[in-house]
Image (tube, rainbow, N blue to C red; front, side, top):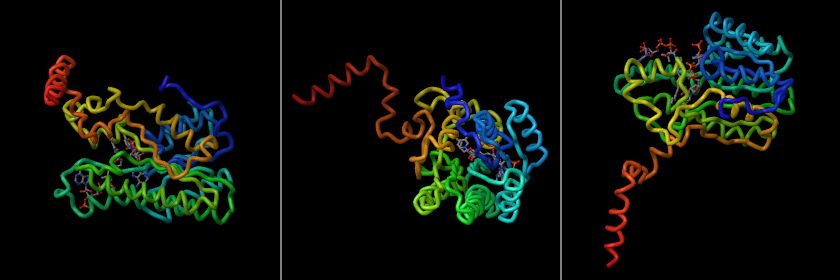
Length: 291
Ligand code: HXC
Ligand code: NAP
């Protein structure tokens, strides 16, 4: 069931949505579903060749209108140009999905200042650049409704060792989401975030689980529901948050991780390791103390 499309046909009809990092991985998966639901979608990232190939593929798959625009989200002027390209093509924009990211595992003491910066610049500054440019446009045009959806991670609030620049940046994106949800609601702009657990993509796995780390640190083992995420179930959630069905959801971060982060957090969750037959003995020991 969770690999099936969820929303009814036409749920995003007439909407123009920009997906940063839409040429690959989760951005591509969400773009496909937005198109299937009737949206027109601009996919944007640094690599135009990759984007054009993806745009062609998405158009063939869905019959929808796709625009590929090169834009490094770290550069504010490029973001403004990307927005102009979308407006020239379709005359409006309704949704922004801040999905572009950079990340790699490393002990923090091994990072140069530039290595720390590159992640902060793509994730936090990139999200800020897009949000500011699009927000100014919507406010100036007095557009009635617009939606920003930010992709964070569960370690935006728990933090995580070995991906410290990413955790720092995603925490900032989450703070931005919640802050602007309140400040810009008066302009009709909604802000929400999704915090995915592991959803295998080439971009993430190459940088987070290189070589045989994939086998050594199998994510499935630390996820209570016993599996990693399917792209369609993330796309279902993203489409709902982009659509008018979620009009009263504002400032929310929705976790979609099979219970992974809570498993790491709960004080006694390690008792999962105790086999069924030992519970009789443990119960007897506890009850015995009462006497
Ligand atoms: C240490 C590194 C490094 C590494 C790069 N650097 N890789 N340092 N370990 N593995 C350093 C460089 O030496 C340089 O330092 C600085 O970082 C910038 O590197 P560049 O290669 O010049 O940067 P750039 O070409 O802009 O590439 C950005 C990138 C790259 C982030 C380094 O990996 C990239 O393009 N990533 C985009 C896609 C991506 O990361 N996807 C995964 C998202 S997954 P100096 O000192 O010379 O400046 C994700 C999932 C989270 O977020 C949750 C999962 C469960
Ligand atoms: P991905 O395929 O590597 O996606 C990252 C995208 O960002 C790429 O398309 C990349 O395209 C683009 N990008 C990177 N730097 C950019 C820049 N400076 N300007 C514009 N675009 C840039 O990885 P993914 O797994 O799909 O990740 C997508 C999102 O999900 C990210 O926000 C990530 O943090 C989040 N996430 C993923 C997982 C997971 O398990 N996969 C879990 C939690 C959260 P170019 O290289 O062409 O620029």
